Image (cartoon, rainbow, N blue to C red; front, top):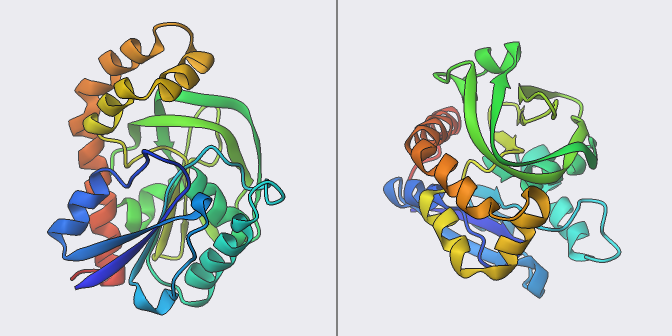
Length: 241
């Protein structure tokens, strides 16, 4: 069986629907809780790297020194080893930062259900093969990639965020949006007061109920999109148990 190395940055965060994909495809996940000081294991033991989101920002290395080693691991994994990589939100930003791009505060943050549009290159790229030109996605970010690294392909954009997804070759993908979120992910926030408070700071009182009402019916559509992207990555890289 193959193994996935997951970098986690905060409690109650996980790879969501990708864990189902890993189970179906014979990929065993191993999670490293970086903010707690857990060390990064030998990369040679793994076949896939999955980097989650988080409340940290890529430039906060003085506050979170482990970001330095994490970026080094991403750079080695994607740039030198050219191994399969998936990064969501912060994981997308860390990918671009580690490979020489620029990340900064978002011109306008995005929280909730939003639309993204595939770029011309995205419509032709193997990792987005089979997707329609516009997709509904889940967003929760206040930072963004300002400049993609050299050699990256920008796959999608939105009206407020120019770089919503990037590919490095056919082996690495970063999405600013949370393609890992499931109905269970969002339902779980009901028992996490800090999550609800953070959501209401961005979207006002009652934001959680409004988000559930809008997002829940769209989950099958979002799941289908994510499954296509993951299958494309598997096909392009030979990633299967």
